[in-house]
Length: 303
Image 1: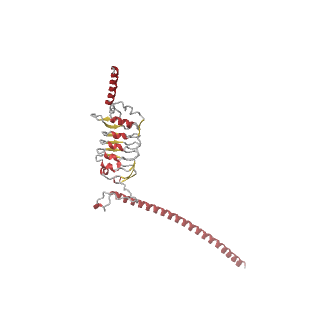
Image 2: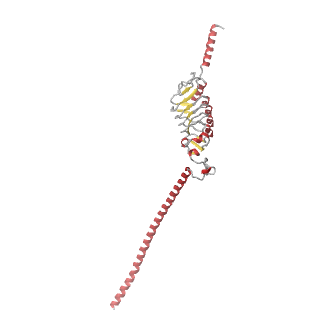
Image 3: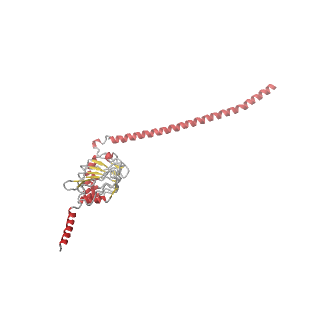
């Protein structure tokens, strides 16, 4: 082999070696896979390039300084469309996913449960559909879950009750239905976390669920020694029932008095007509009698 052949072979080997040494990290490749399913109308992801060694300087991306693993995706208010790729599950060191106030649609991928270090998920104000993946219940250190103002529907998975570090839960303004599981951390959140889901019921929203027969279920957590004492909720229902009964009775009385007034007016009018007829008959009967009396008087006077 000649000298030139050796030089060319060496350059080729160095090129292959340099590409293998400086190729994009697996996290960067996962992000590029995510980008392929996004509609970037403002071109904010233009610097997401496969020619980079690391994604840590890309728009909206933060990394751990020691190992260059992706720590957060922060892309709110970017007018991003498209769907959330299942490749998000490859970012196993991800702590924060913030894609709120965009135009994302489709479902929340189940693979999001493969990110065990996730602490905050912000997906509010998009057009996401489907349900909440039950695998989110595997994110044991999750503290913030905001899925509000989407088009999510179905039942709320009981697996969310395992998120014992959860401090903020916002599922409002969706189309969830059924009973809210009264388990674990879910039992600590009130109506504000679920408001705007008209078909939800349970302790958290102070709305009793109904059985298959259509009757409301007695809500749990009533102490046995206080069973005979009306609660605030039962007092509220009783007060509402009393007000409704009074309103109904008032309406019936008003209708009754209207009918009575109309009947009295019609009776008075009939009485007046009968009186007038009697007077007319009396006048007509008196005229012949008067004429007869005058005729007799004239005959007697003539004789």
